[in-house]
Image (tube, rainbow, N blue to C red):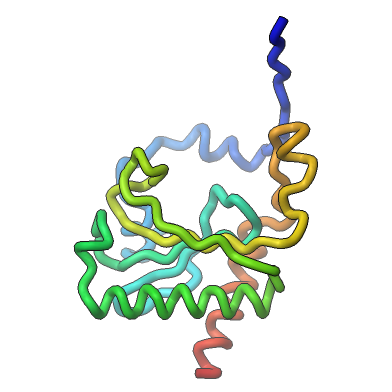
Length: 167
């Protein structure tokens, strides 16, 4: 007999999300407009860097164009340049502050490709460490993120600011 085991993970901070009225607005565009900026790490002329609030790993960032565009083919040269410079800067900052041993970097184009926000293209930057896929996901289908997003946002905002001064 195939029995399914239910896993419980207490995450009391999620109750605010569950109870909140769901918005159809693009959260990236809301950040660009100056709303919900607690996880906006950096804003340039053509691109932004934000913390993924549903991270695969601690330090999971997203880089997106400021303009709401759904596909990489709609980006102009200035957007492409600043987006990829922001990816480079994100990697440099994460290496300095979190000391990962590698990265997964990717773009999901379209809902069927896994894009959770298919209308606003973004690049995922996921720091990786040897052993970060440990027994928890394998045994209990649970991922442990060891740091609060708020604490991480404060650290990365400072680090991005310092990195920009060093250039």
